[in-house]
Length: 378
Image: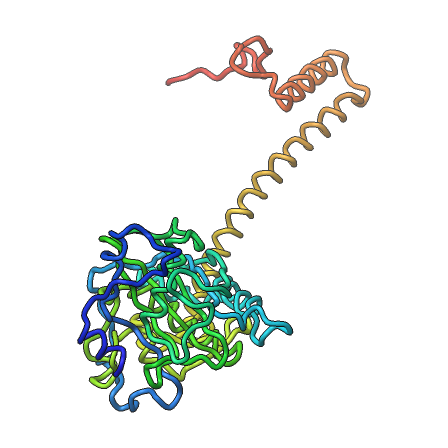
């Protein structure tokens, strides 16, 4: 029976806790998952391309729901295999570094058109012992219930940060499976959804992997979709993915198989309404748009710097001329004594002016005497 069939037949379900880690009874009634999801298919399991988006039919609209505009990803590595020696490949550290590298790259820049700004790594947790009703190792194959049960057990046991949980919370709790562990849903290698505790929805995701590239590829797909559509009410399409898709139709689904690298990490492109194609910031059109924006900003910064420099240089030059003039007047040629005295007085005034000593006090001698001023009027 598929995950979707299970969700349809049993509806929303509570969770089962081990005796030694039982939370208050009300939590048993409130924690539930609705069976809705966004999925990633393994290569070769994607619906035929003809059923996917084509041309003008490929566009995504906003349903008015929640977004993770500044996501914080909390990585949860499930299984004793992650703590083995020698360390597995990829290791916890390599997967974590890949997540950070993606955040530090321009990968998410084109999500701004969907009101998503970017994100950061929130925490890393390794689960190698049983917690609540969840075992030390994930079942193989595992179901979606196994994943969100684990997250909720960790939450109630205070084993993961909970500050990012809430109606406006930005947390995404992402479970990474060990190599060789697969989903019970045939052909599905990654998924994101949410479960509910009381009236609060908690976004979560899981990925399977067989290498660092496979991890980062599935992770990047789930990242952009969980940010733009964490609850199935954000940026989606009713036509772009075709009838055979089987989950929410989101901006990563129509770009599966289109890959590139960001900071040398393999990632999947995602759909851009603005470019009408699958993109990442390194793609030619997006790169050109980014360059134009950068050049415009650099030009403004350069101009501002140039203007400031010219003002400073002008002030320095004026000060230099005043000082040079004063020096020359300190050693005048042999001239009439009255003229020399007048020149010395002017020199002193110039120095006072340069030093800022002539202001509004009116105690400095004028350059022009009263009888030298021109008459005003006719």
